[in-house]
Amino acid sequence: MSEERVKTYCGNCAKETYQGIEYRNEEVEALEILAKDDEKHKTESMWIPGFAFWQVSKCLGCEKLTFMHVLKTSHDPAMDIVSYFPKYHLRPVPEWYRELPIRYLEILKEVYTSIHHGSFILSLMGSGLFWTCLSLKRSGIKERSSKN
Ligand SMILES: [Zn+2]
Image (cartoon, rainbow, N blue to C red; front, side, top):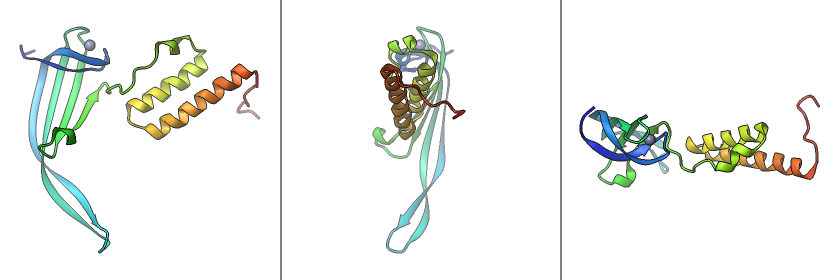
């Protein structure tokens, strides 16, 4: 591990922490972009230069590793495509979820997994199922079993 330290996202702590750099690499690559001309109904292929940045760092708090990949296609940092493993947590799982019965806990856990992977439509469908099941339980109405 190098002596260099950076503040970056830790998948285990689910927040930014100070981390030591274990591995870092950069590469320039050509990226294909498909553009569609609506008037001519024609798809054209264009090649643009891209810059990829790879980093494995170790959290100075929990000592877990985090992998980060950044793909730059312009000078604007807002346009960077940044990926983390373990995944970046857009929303932390609420502490009260541990108090739920196992059936509801599993549904809510999958909802948060889909949020963390950017599957927002799937997470919305799961949230609807979660609240429907919980409302039925609280109102005393029995859910249909899969055998019916
Ligand atoms: Zn950590």
